[in-house]
Image (cartoon, rainbow, N blue to C red; front, side, top):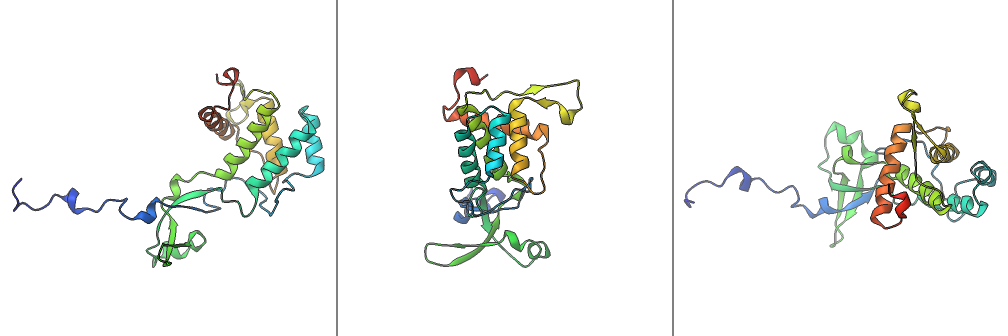
Length: 214
């Protein structure tokens, strides 16, 4: 290559990953909050009332110790201080109307020399509702612990919003209604996708028996 030739546009353009701040993850709530979960300082007390613990045990023939453990795990996922939604960040260039309307997604990151850097999510479009996924994962974990398979029944003869059925679906829907205000249920299709995502997580961690991996 001739040394007098100007550098290519590719070499002139800085790499998107040159800023080390963009390799850091911080916790942000509310970006993709799809369910109105009751967040609180649960500690080890659990997110379910004693009545709810008993109702779940009786409705789904589960050991009360399991549903009480479910309550504790849900409390960890919904604790106001739990950092569940970890999101990649970028420096906040500030100054635009859009940014001024989204100050709730603005935080300070402290570099090694103690300098504070205002930051915000790198790309909110790619953020998932990890609290929701954590709740689904917790329910599936308890379901497996009770010796039940992570299976779903599909009813093609029903409307698309009602096609997903089965004990596991009913169990998760009941749990979600107990930890949301106002009480609500999940879309059957969203729930199916979340369960499949959780199954993949369990499979990677070796937590599924061969009979459950179909």
